[in-house]
Length: 221
Image (cartoon, rainbow, N blue to C red; front, side, top):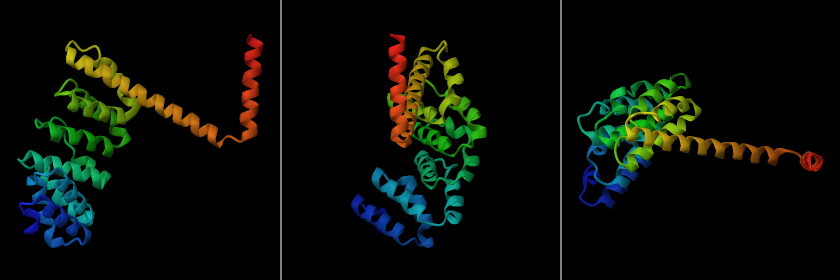
């Protein structure tokens, strides 16, 4: 417990790794509390890893409490840990207020977690909430939102098309850039699917397909 709050971040890092390697229920509270105050990014990530090593039955209820914390870092790190655990039951804990959190880092993390946990039936509602954040923040924050929307896939296209005509130029520009990202990802997926299809197609069939294509081209000429 002393090492987790030592002045030297390398000591805190080793302590978090040790706790994760041999989870002790008696240290759960300390781990969660340290997530809210730990200044070093690598140590915080290791704290989340250590929490993942505990049984979800004891970690999830405690992490859920942090989602209502007055401390922005505690909220953000709790969300980050939820994303690592990946328990779909935590979707019900992601509120509208989290997606609109005044703290940029907390909102950014909430967007990512929501997209990773959302059931297919709720994807449109989530899209509608995320689209209201278009135009927010600096380039880095906007890119995070664009990536979150793109991860939802084709369901976001109607909302983005509407937002691209928004009278606010910041919203319209962000929506347009996000649409390009969505289209680019779709093109990549299509190319990967075609490549996979060709890889599993027997060689004689590929040869016949090429011959047929060449014959059709010659006929057209």
